[in-house]
Amino acid sequence: MPSNPFNEHLEKNRANYQPLTPLQFLQRAALVYPNHPAIIHGARRFTYGEFYARCRQLASALAARGIGEGDTVSVMLANTPAMLEAHYAVPMLGAVLHTINTRLDAPIVAFQLDHADAKFFITDREFAPLSKAALEQANVKPPVVDYDDKEFPQSGERLSDVEYEDFIAAGDPEFEWSMPSDEWNAISLNYTSGTTGNPKGVVYHHRGAALMCYANNLEAGMGQHPVYLWTLPMFHCNGWCFPWSLSAVAGTHVCLRWVRAKAMYDAIVEHRVTHISGAPIVMATLLNASPDERRSIEHKVSFNHAAAPPPQAVMDAMAAAGFHLTHLYGLTETYGPAVVNEWNVDWNGLDEAGRAFKRTRQGVRYLALEDLTVMDPSTMQRVPADGETIGEVMFRGNIVMKGYLKNQKATDEAFEGGWFHSGDLGVLYPDGYIQLKDRSKDIIISGGENISSIEVEDVLYKHPAVAYCAVVAKPDDKWGETPCAFIELRPGMDATMDELMDWCRERLAKYKCPRHIVFAEVPRTSTGKIQKFKLREMAKDA
Image (cartoon, rainbow, N blue to C red; front, side, top):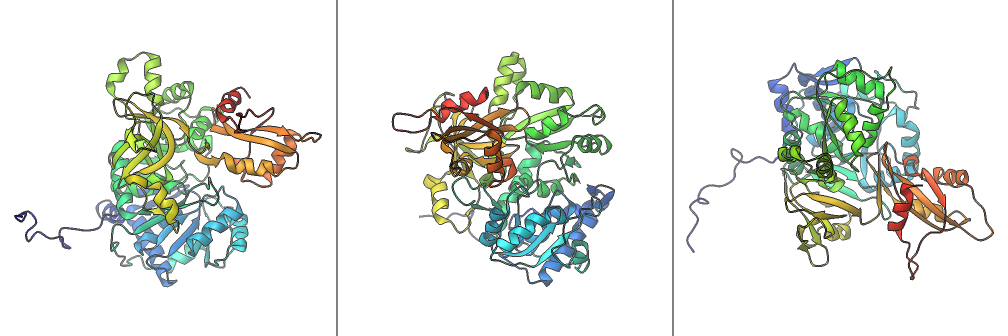
């Protein structure tokens, strides 16, 4: 067989091949735009030169504590400069960043710390009670550093004698960090919501994170020097990789500790925010603001929203308020959004109903995703592109996770047949757009957070008065969806709505608790299987 002349003497070497990583975006931004604002947090400002130096200081300080390649650094932080710095400093050492959902309960946080084998823990004083309880329950006992937000002081208990600013002050701002030895190396660890038992640890790699940055900037139309308001939690899929993405275009991060209407309007107007990402709850917060909280927005703001598509009335109100909406869809396993409802200008000529329908579809694959389709999971054949045949949504490409940490069985199942199985059910249209129709595991997406109906049902079933129960999603203008529980009581036993809600609050994270409880016969098939499709219809009127 003749040799390929394009392979002869043309080998990969250090001059023509480097591992992909988002870390070099910050290095470049600091070189090209050292004085451009990188972070705004209250009255504090950090330029790109300062941002890069602080990240190197943090990396240096962690290295002095023995953190190195393959170690996990866990953080319990709000959307603050410390969270942004951790996204760079930790992987600068070849270590893995584990961002913890601040809305979880202590047992789940303890599980994550143990499963991740956390070697270091940085925690915000606001979350001191949660962090303390989790550390008491965890087997690992990592060194702890407290983050004391000087702009928005918190009164939580100190869990360490080391404060974050003092910790990084001891680091070297000229610290010589290293590029990853392999772009396939892990950069971060994110946990799913534990829909069937304990949550699974989703591992991201440097290659996927870097490619996601390019895709985010293109799909969101970021341009040069965007101003990004942090309403999306950075603990959620690493903030959809935007902590890294903004450095590629030397954008400005506007930190927002709490998602409050007045704070958002003030930031949008005073800093001329150009981009926001978030769930429908953020839209509802903006639209339901009181007159004294609102401010007139004189420029267009791009709003990337995920979770369940908001009602048409909400989209119309957001457009009237000065926001340009783009609907996204993805999973923790796909680095956040990997599907975009890319608007075709030809659709502008459709009537209102036609345009509304186009907006309800999840969309087409991100530029960094190689393939997206809907398949029959039993045959692994694509379903007809007729907009009617239901199958499972599947992904393939470089922005799909490495796999689940320490869980080969779940990894193999997720990648069966050479595709990532999302578990979401949908249809495929002739133009390649997909639309979700159901969720195979009855996941409820509330305020951008996944809630397992099974987990809520398990808690309710432990109440002595509950004979049968089923939890489904109830559409909600503010949260997108909320849990609605249907309850059948045992003969001769009583329980009130308040009693059952208190029961759940004692055993579940607050956002997972049912907001509606209906006492009614739970519809079942002849074999005893609960008919959730009927309950979903009933929940709309509950």
